Length: 241
Image 1: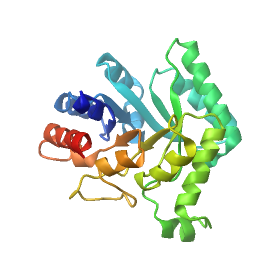
Image 2: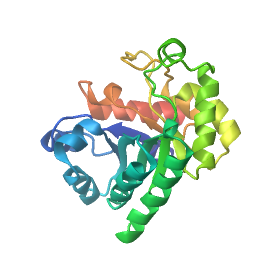
Image 3: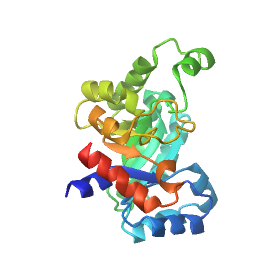
């Protein structure tokens, strides 16, 4: 039971260029129940990959990170809401009006097709951004954790169901935003794994302890010699960690 719960909290990205590659990865990892479809695959394959996942009764995180004026974000989220996915991402810095418009539109889209309403979640700050980049490249004067907290509170105040944040900010955000607010954490790396472009990372067990609802873990699973064994090992770490 505990291993099943652990498996359900891991989202694996389908970071591949074609539907054929995606199907091959699905076949390699049948135990994965929650998959992320990001920009590369969606731009390449379109919504057909979502149908593949639905047919296999998988949960779907549609990670397109919409960031635009309120009217455009509403239109995009209304369309995305019709797909029957579980999570949809937008960028929190788009502002309150855009977030509120996106939230309402996503629910409208789902209702129009009889789908369960998706959870709209806002990206606080990409996990490839470190404190120096935030201060000197983006010219944000707040400390990184404070900035992530402000973006999280903005998303919550706008009616969204949760946020995407690094696990390093999860403990603070969980304490402030409460138990019912979703915290989806990329930048999770098992001990000994290369961090790659993730600047703010934790191990799976640490991230769960910090308050993460879901962990997004890609390369440490998909780019190993035995992805199924790597996935199981992470489930075991969460269960016993």
